[in-house]
Image 1 (cartoon, one colour):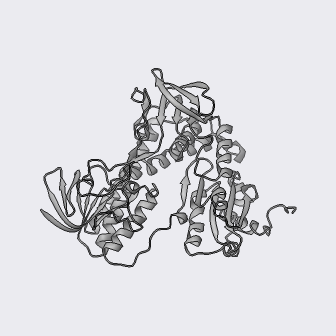
Image 2 (tube, rainbow, N blue to C red; image 1 turned 30 degrees about the vertical axis):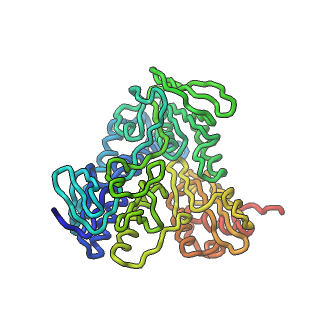
Length: 464
């Protein structure tokens, strides 16, 4: 039996960062991962999909260079090489994580772990670890939607789609959430026919409606078929997706050569041993935790996707380092989930921090809104990407920023600025008063802040 101050089960963004921070805090740490270091994000999620999207962007821009005075003939893509590059990027990053763990003195075990007691972890290689603290970071898997025909050949989840080496001709995506929209963007930019089937009456339901309206318009403009407000009833051989309207039951069918089931993600909490030691979980299998990610069992933490707080890689990382600091007795602050950015890598990109306008108005506060259109941004125009908008939602009484929403070039990078200001409890006027470099896309954040008070000099005068 090997003894450690803390053992981390799961080597994804939360687990591997937690192990490193534990070591930085002077604790003897073990990290157990049965597959590749980096978890879903690095190997089957964030990084692979963004690598694919960049390949699609390169292809699309090469074909669309005429407006910039660039001509390229016979532009084509090699789908197998796109997948090969995706795999190479993941391998490189996973190898980098292994080197980081080693450099910090973390002991890494490539094995499957089962919790035997609050202080004991058994590995399937025959080893047993004893630890004073236990951090569970086993992540999530694509949720299985119980629909007849879901096991047919050609019906895949996101993991299965990432492993395909042949490009589909017509892909049907069941689910208009983040996963579905990003894959739709990838394939439509390669020229593949895409149909999205979604039960809600709009895509990306949690986002602000001004943003989702824009996303839908862009998808349609690029040839994506949106079938909204319908429930999938079955999938037949030949990959016919049968659906019915949620409102009136009207039937319909979509037929393609690949069907992606993009119905969200479920926590990996079964078979881990959490129930053995009495860790409380909700009916969906998510581990119940407090603001410091402590479970109902003293000394046991649950970080990342398995606690269901916010299934994002950067949240898992933040929770992992927070838990490691708490274990080491260092001062640490609970995460404010209303100050964490969420990103969707469609085209244009979109990101948000905080509340939607609808959610903000439901608070009963006097709400103000400021918007700026990307058509007024010089850098975006030089890039030929001047489509989109920026929107602030704020409390008129205190000038507190309640929500930030952006769709446009580099949107996913712009969100970090506003998140930082919100974390420091800054105001709309302070963002507006911050001089932004010109010409940059970042100026749209400043312009939208000015628009909150009707003082944006690069927008038409609003008649009141």
